[in-house]
Length: 325
Image (cartoon, rainbow, N blue to C red; front, top):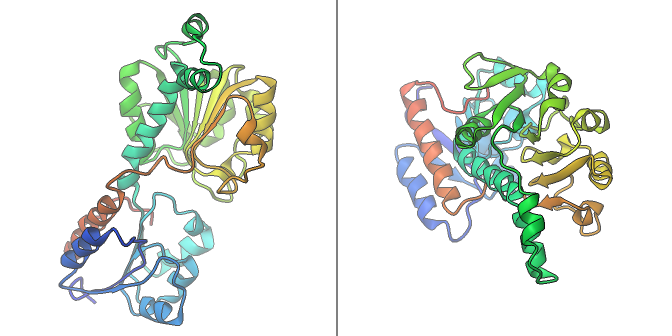
């Protein structure tokens, strides 16, 4: 099979308002056969169509993908690929020569900007000022000024070093923090000091900010746990924009209430949505956003354009962007 006249299966989650983006996708795939299904369609028709497809765009379940013997390339419409991040699934896809790409190029910028906003917002005591505005209408000028640290010279440790971390480093560098990271596989071309993830206990005590961008898999469940929280310096701020399951939230709550961790910012939780009676909602200095870090007004358009860019590369036989496998 060559890269012309491809059968492309798509279950990207287009809304009724995404007509422009759907037309963009249809125009770009006019030379191929495009089959579109709803995001959660697990019908026999959707499975049969996937079994005849060479390319999948959206998020087919791994079970669907493994049954589709003609698949040559899967592009996920998310940066995360948790359900695919298991050795048995990856090994089978590799054995069949199936390429797997994600959409990190779509989400690195908004996630990095979201983290930058929270890091700088907490440093400048913006949540505290907003709380005062909403409650006592006070004018806590002296206390806020006295507790607003400059980021210059502080140390940030980034857990995971993919596309989001690379962009975050670019945004944080002008603020003159000391930046370091850990990751599973150190390439040697990283723009900051990056150590193997096995050295995390050695580095945690040095950090004023611990920024978690780890994916969820068997190795990262509760990666931040009681022992690792205890290894952090008193007054550290913890951020999680990776996956909720990577943090032991009971241990985090305890460390926040004790004051050992000064603040936590969570864009992801376990479970999601976080139940209304969950204690983290009312834990002091815990700030939560509803998994909105990657969101942006032209998100769907950028997903489609990223797929089209990779489709052209696939047609030419070029290396794909954001390749996982």
